[in-house]
Image (cartoon, rainbow, N blue to C red; front, side, top):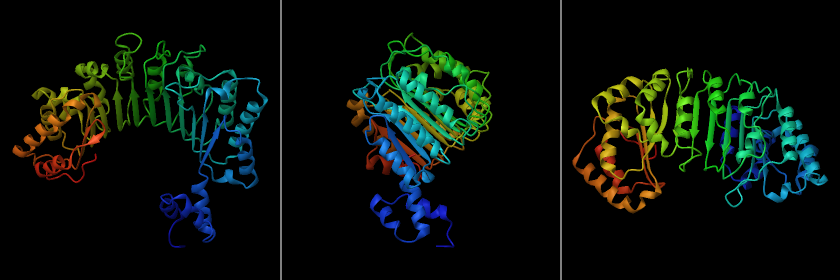
Length: 420
């Protein structure tokens, strides 16, 4: 064992079930520490967990905080927030903060509420006070990943006026129908610049009756655009408050002001508005021209609208110098035509190795006919010039049939995998 680095044993042991990890504790001292790092890597704390204080005390007593790298703070139900003056709940908040302070090297922090009946619990003043104390506790630390999940009031949870010098990944997900309870939607404008942030994920997953003020979102993206390597912007399929809102925000987030010097992954999904963005060829071309030498992964809806003419194909060829993975979804059932157009893109983008196409469940009545048409096309066409190594076709989340996969393998000899 002395000849094998501990990190390799750690990686191998991370695939073991709990029972085998427990057995590993008794092998010898090195394997004991490997198993302890895995068993106690994630600390889950919930305000609604009556045994949480005892759990924290147990971690203190046995020095288990030394192994914690990730903390998940969650809410389980509205009952957790009923009485802001509840002494028991205050003690749980205090116990949570005490636990965070005990962790020597915290890498990842998740803060959010669990979904109950399609909605999320709105933070109250007691929780907000706790969250502010939480940011003060972890500010200036080596925290590398921060994930916030909430309803519209979640904008109150955003850390502002605190320094996170090591933060590399920031994810903000707003779920469910919600109305902001407090006037703090401009918090993003107060955010300090995160000097090494390279991944930003923003998702607004359902329509809002009166949603948060998203005007500050492009400002935040602008501040981080010079360091970002991965950018994800997801807006709902449903209509938002005001037609064109999603398209307007995307246009601003992807404007000429953004640097995107190191962007490798771009994922932009905005329901029906994504089609409008793809129609804006000039915006699309300007965006990709700034990251053509770095972009390796691209996820867009209806990218097939970009490959219909020789001029557009020429634009695509000039824009993508390093693109390896392309993912797209479409609401149209003319599969054979779409696939032919995507294969054209695969021919002109010589670096492309992986292609994924998704059709939504709303097209389920057409799936059988679509796949039959595809099989007929593959029997009569060959795409030997394509260099694709991975291809994924998903019908409502399910992969293509084995017959279709075999025909794809015959038509595209370079394919090695059917899950891109």
